[in-house]
Length: 498
Image (tube, rainbow, N blue to C red; front, side, top):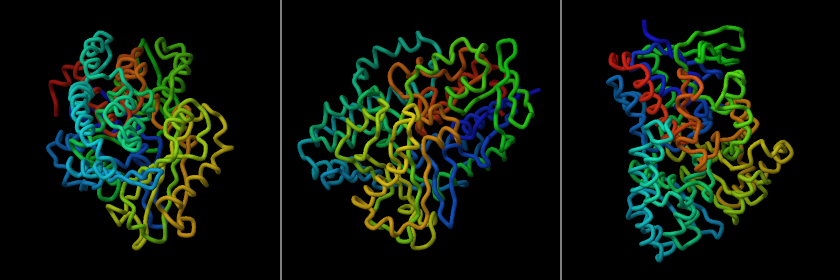
């Protein structure tokens, strides 16, 4: 009889691991607490507007292709992935801007317009980023870091690549213009890290975008989730909604079952958890059963920033606004230091604005636009979010009106938000952190939550909190790591791939 795998959570990591386990021949049941698939990639729909809740930037699309190819299917029969150009528009505080994306020549022309002195520096930055990418992504993103000696073997190569530097130091080494330094150092923020403290191994993201470009699914990220959901049903994966996990039961040093809030229990041979590992260990597994991840150790971890996300639809179209826009405030390092050190975000915010209707007009009623804007803010460890939330909202609207969306307030048709409290409640994220634990060196690779639990040999983790980290490529790669572990741990099943 096939072993039974329970996958907890239906984010991209959970869906990918369910498909990979099914391909190996396991019986797979995916349980989701919400009423739709996707986790942070769920959608909100109201008054004809469709909003992606979270992920909006699709890089390394081949990782999605692979999931369909496992079962001899072609992703193009399920979803259309549309290349986005430019990838990002950077709006600087002095009124200048940079359109980033397309060919290398396109980027060089934009840099030449901003600061000709940085053209050669960018070429060197890109070449260095490619070298880091070749090691950090191509060689290490899909393999387990569950042995310390394996990590030690990687150290000489990482030192050779200069990964002891921060992302900011990496960027500053090649670029002189502060605007360009900001634009090409924001990558860690996409995975919950501070460019001024995150190791420059995350500079690989720069070349990753260059390698495959930036894409967006027709119909929104939610349509991609639905395509994957269709595939899961076709290949025999059972999906259960409204399943709120109350407890993960242990027996004889292993995991035996999952108990739900409604009183039901589901036995399991293997559990793959797509939830936040910090929350899972602390709230779903009895403390005296955990030797490695005690409450005390979890409380000492450093967590990523919180996120304030404002979703809104307008009764007019803002045709000049690109799909992805980064709006920089006057401050950069000072803002990030406040946020990551638990200070107050203040009024001088930097924002990410998403206008999906620039690529797919069907996400809003005719003649209208759908948006979301994201502001990095402190997580709930600061403790006074409820007192500052309204001020943050108004400040976000002020910046948008002043910088890119004139007369926004008078054109708002739909408007609602999602904040660190919602991340904590909806996604069971410790401290409402947007990306689980921060990707600093002491919390990366071997030092991050392991993909196979140190305490329970049949409990595995995928998603932002484990190796290789947050971001869509990261969570999809974590499913490949778990697949490799399952093949090691269950070679008989692996030899009978369906």
